[in-house]
Image (cartoon, rainbow, N blue to C red; front, side, top):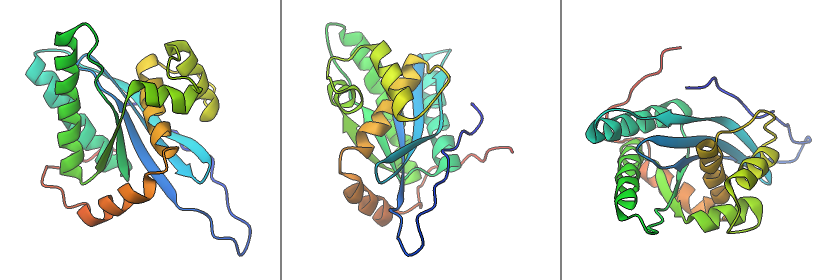
Length: 198
């Protein structure tokens, strides 16, 4: 996992109530490479908290277990208020769509166990929210995500897509609804929690 990267803090003027921070975990699913990114949104300001790419090896069942365990650890460490997940695009390769569906299932199980609400967006919705075009290329997404989050170093493609999913949710206007859902569900998930070593 990469080191924690926190957005610069900004204080509101005296007497002005700052909007609450909404923390979103975005996921670009995959059973070989899974991108993840955490974004804090305060009003119109967006900041990256952390991001990376999970590389999965071994048998399919082992990879899915790793995905679920890693998502549980990310939810425990960063406490996102919601998870924004890219939907599966079927296309011509049905088997690839099945594998992506399995990865999405592992992510959703981890979110449920952690008490984190899930929002789903199509690839076109995410590209439109980030780059202004539902047909944006991978390179355009990497460029725009970096600009929106003021990230100076290069982002891996899967990492940028995951951060894009988080940005899409932050811009969607659905935060209040999912925050309420997350508050009702609380943090009493049934799954085990894995603590991070400091």
